[in-house]
Amino acid sequence: MSGAQSVREVLQIVPRLPPPAEGLGGYALALAGALRENHGVDSRFVAAADVSRSAAALRDLLAAAPGLPVLLQYAGYGYQSRGCPRWLVDGLDAWKRGSPDRRLVTFFHEVYAMGPPWRSSFWTSPVQRRLAARLTRLSDATATSLDLYAGLLRRRGPRREPVVLPVVSNVGEPAVAPPLSARPPRLVVFGGAGNRSKAYGRHLAQIAAVCRALGLREIADVGPPIALPAAAGGVPIVRLGLLSGGEVSAALLAARAGFLAYPAAFLGKSGVFAAYAAHGVATVCTTAAPPTSGLTAGVHYLPAERPVEAAGLQAVAGAARAWYAGHALRRHASLLSELLGCAS
Image (cartoon, rainbow, N blue to C red; front, side, top):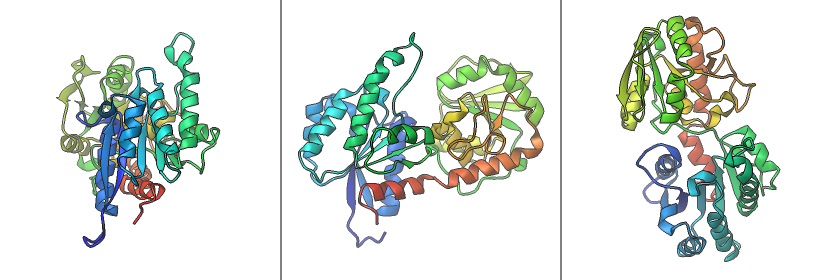
């Protein structure tokens, strides 16, 4: 966009802004950069703490920015500990009722939780569903990261068909990914404390088997501090710790495969899988799932429960990178700027 064109603005609502860089805040900042660079659209941010989680304060703040479309980055648990942010939905409702031309787009990173009766999500799920339904009807357009979530939204009466955009890599999108044969024989385990602890706990034997099958001689651990074993089946584990986005990107480009303890049916909303795919790292996942969100087991990722062979590793990494390219950050910015009514 040329400098002669006016710069427009959107207002993004997030639970919190970085640091840390991961999560909805990290995505919102990355999206803001792409909106500015590719569409000349600037972003203002409202974090939950900025309005003290108050419906009235949110309404008043939004009303003080007349004409700005609002992009809500929604995951209920980010705004309220039980995943039931009534204040958020009430505030948006009051703001929308103040003027019929106010535009709201909601990106549902989650819709609602479900669980067995011994978990709190079982009891809060009805409230979460009602709030999601209200948000869906309030929104002029919706987007989400999974086909599954789009189906849930369709049943809640959206004004238009939900847009499905699998999540992007918050640690960069390298223009070139070296072939795996040019990388060290290394497995990377990247992500938050919970999934990495699970990987080294119940899945340590799988990690060892993957390293044997793929001829990998080192495991690089990337993420916040957790208790780590010294090795997996004799393959040493090297703690890299918390790294900047650029440092994580460099570590991924220096690995052939990545291990992920995550349900395969939800890979489209996994920032770790997005990072592996964007960097041309072949993902080994602890589970498999029927084809969903454009992903197929054995094509875009390798299930650890099945025999893993080195011969097809490059094809898997390449297929995942090609899948990612179809919804990279630039694509998010293009579609969301259109939904917000400010596409160039």
